[in-house]
Length: 115
Length: 113
Image 1 (spheres, rainbow over the protein chains, first blue to last red):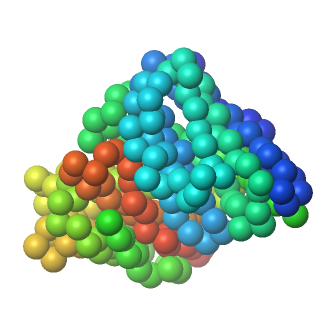
Image 2 (cartoon, each protein chain N blue to C red):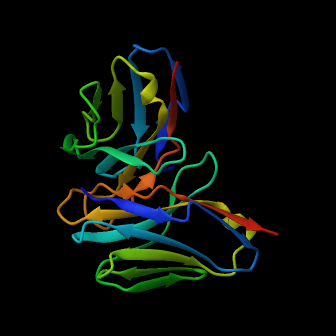
């Protein structure tokens, strides 16, 4: 149906709180990616799922960040003990398969603000 | 890891003129180079991409060139229109480096009437 969707579109939280960001990929897309985009910068890779498993989590900045995709569709990015430096737009993307040349379709992002 | 540099950071052109945005990459194993357009508050959208076995690709007013020896690639937009105004990002993917894209820092293109 529609493209990649993300909820919430905006999230404001206080320093130290826990947040969850959700991504609904395009139906049938097996590959799912999370990126983080700070103001004036390009998207920065966080983690990549192929199916249910994290194929590459080398971009997660530290152990406060964790992501899951239990049924190979919806994914949740979880951030513990949020810090002001976590404020950014978190983008999710999906592609038909985890191959080199498949287009990554991006969602609208979740703007996270940590006060 | 891969590092992608993008220039210029801002570019202003008159409607109808051409615009060129340049990127360089560091890892010679990179084999896929997409370009994304991002309008204010919107999601990035792929506008064109090129694989490492091709030197040039064109799609209507948009073209991309790749120089593997010099490790740089460029986006060319001809006959610019006001709706071309947006931020453009180049990206690179490394062979065997998973499927993650490494993005440049973006170019704010403004097409003036």
